[in-house]
Length: 141
View 1 (cartoon, rainbow, N blue to C red):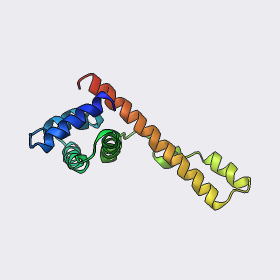
View 2: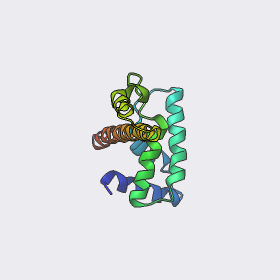
View 3: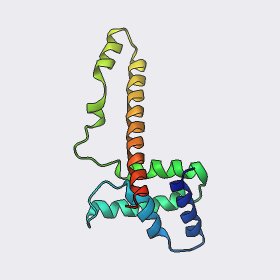
């Protein structure tokens, strides 16, 4: 587990002891994932509320399991909101699907190809979000 994960685990341990560390958890481990303007908007309030819910949902986990659940959960909250980012449908490689179909591919094979492409896109998005959050954490933002 990295430094970020160890810090999150320590804060959650303090949370279980009854200390009021929710604000620290949100500030250090949720806000770096937030890509919006830091101003009082409904989007920010929703993100913070859902982040607090996530802390409660993952607080029983430890180690890498905690980090995996945290990253999955925090990514799902705001999903790396980017109004200019193309949708998943726009990012699918239809040339590959057409080639698959013209070469006699089955419906199951084409569906599997689409699923693989979507899984790859989601994983790529998580890596970008994780790297962005890591840079922000290291810079103390």
